[in-house]
Length: 293
Ligand code: C2E
Ligand code: MG
Ligand code: MG
Ligand code: MG
Image 1 (cartoon, rainbow, N blue to C red):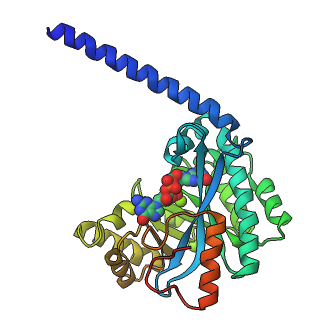
Image 2 (image 1 turned 135 degrees about the vertical axis):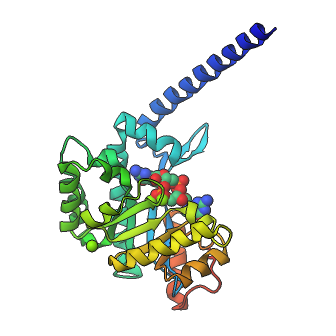
Image 3 (image 1 turned 45 degrees about the horizontal axis):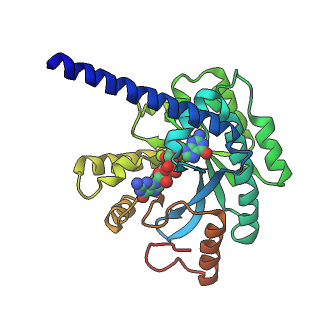
């Protein structure tokens, strides 16, 4: 009996594996055509200055609207894009989109508005080839200063910081583009990175923010990160604030910015524009924390 059920288990396992391999292959081949078919979209999540409640920035987040599977999470397709090299095409596309939108929002609402774009380690390691020319060309096309953009990198970019990575970061900064270290606190969180690389923002990972008010360790770490970052001259953005309580603790720690569902989820460019327009009309932060379009 044991042998029989063991055999079944192996069979189930193989079937499941084959199925997941098939899905993977299917996703990958669909992803290749997704940009052309206009299935890839970008949404923007407001980044709010905690002290004033004003939206100063927005993070561009990629979405894949699959005709059969529905919305595919970036956590599922970004790794596929990275393995296959498609990330270069996708990354360039979102950069171009973000550049176009931020130009518009700076003109309409706030000359200092910034859009933050995630850049994968793979994009930085492109055979030591510099990324500057393409990105700078997009900026020039919109007649934009580099200061309109923030590039979000993870520690993954810095871990094996080869010359090409350092050079690419330097080129970005020379063009005026700011750099944010994303998901801070989840990886090695080596403090040496903060000393070695010129970084403008630390983004505290949402796993810390989530437990604020409940887990005193996470709260202490959050406070420590904020104090340290400020001493180093960095601004802090907290990710994933969902409750009023989390936000008021972050505020009491002097955290500069927050993005989270309490304010707003990622929304389409049109909806972000409606929110920004409302904010401009009121000339005041929207009452309460929620920013509804
Ligand atoms: P990330 O850069 O750390 O982005 C923040 C993620 O947290 C987003 O997930 C956002 O929707 C989510 N989030 C924000 N506030 C809250 C909240 O209050 N509660 C909860 N539960 N979640 C919140 P999303 O859009 O699914 O993106 C996941 C990750 O995929 C991103 O993490 C980023 O690493 C990657 N990604 C997304 N777009 C791109 C892209 O254009 N290029 C690259 N290379 N990676 C991307
Ligand atoms: Mg990010
Ligand atoms: Mg993050
Ligand atoms: Mg610095």
